[in-house]
Image (cartoon, rainbow, N blue to C red):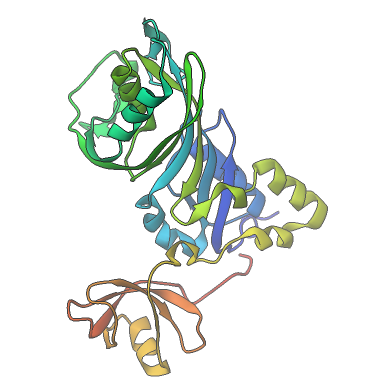
Length: 310
């Protein structure tokens, strides 16, 4: 295979069920190699410990990955009570042990309800946030701890799936930027003990659900049995993450002017992002309505080409 034919133009969203013990970027690169996608990116990292839904954007879909980064997420998490670790999860060393009180399901339900809604959360030291140009986890591994400003988050859902003596299996629905490890530690503290995340599985990202995702092994098996083009059948459209946005279908002349970077007269929700559709109904990118809802300006537009091997 020559350098020019190694990659091909692939456009769309692939829902990956990431396995345990691999970074999000490593999982992305595995899928990219199987697809031979020239351009790819993921939409919010999962820790190596975590499994589950990791939407991958190929080609033109990378232009709209930010929408998924900002989307709410949902998880299933197992919290191990009685032990605190340096990382907040099962990969870290145990730094503190405490007895686990007998848990009453009714009282536990009250504690979980108290965490729902808007709140402030201090990010953990073992995170990818930067301080002075360095990742926090790099500082943590060097034995340093720095002050981290709290961030506003929102817990949409927090429910109990299973209760054992020292294990809680919970569902968590949350806003972007929420650290489930910190949430697990805070819940344990409220219960009078310490804790950490033993298992974490992401089940939803925005409008996407884990049930529609495929593992790397599934992707490789499909390639070997049906060939490369069959992989594209598992791709969602470039605008799959934007299905909730209002659509604006354009006549030929306004569509042409928008493609040239010019705003055009159009009626839509004031100040809203809109999905721009060409006269045939095909997605051509996103635009932003003005404050009066009478004009739309181009925001992110698709390139002229679609598909093909390069």
